[in-house]
Image (cartoon, rainbow, N blue to C red; front, side, top):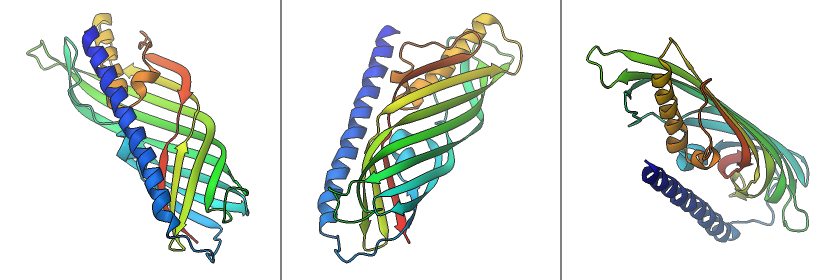
Length: 264
């Protein structure tokens, strides 16, 4: 079991390194490409609407549909907000000694985030929203799920239902670059976004369950969070779901985003 955990941690670490490598490569390729597209006479639009392209693509979050709006406040400052739906990945092949997942009864959630951007005057040829920026950000994610577990050693077909809530609050500081291509098309890359993340997971049972069986299911729910949601194996590496169904921690958070949008 220890070996399996080590292998899973190693696979997740390799996956995260690949993600970061892809994001870095995308950034530098985009810089080279966009230098040929910049027009010194471009119009400085005050608004950008955009779509978060990276949430589901890079981090495996299902039903990730998040849109944003950025408003330029001055030639070198702006404010943006992003809102949309998201849900935890589907449960597949999560098993314990006595239980296996029968089905997902429900999965839902949402994400809200905001940032305040300072476009660096000495580094940028253009006014906001085009150029290199830094600034603080806040992000809140809320996930809910319901799972039906079957007894694997029972011929009666009995099952147990669980419900869970998982919230993530992250506060940090970001560095990114936004390109305005062909006068209207916006490509926004948040490449560095360290912060502090507050993670809180809570599971409940719809009926009374034997303590031994309850702990097995709680271990299975931890597998869902740590193995199916990239990065959470690091966050909850030394944590266990308590008898009350709670697992929480405060640790380093991060933010890496690719937006595509339209300036107007």
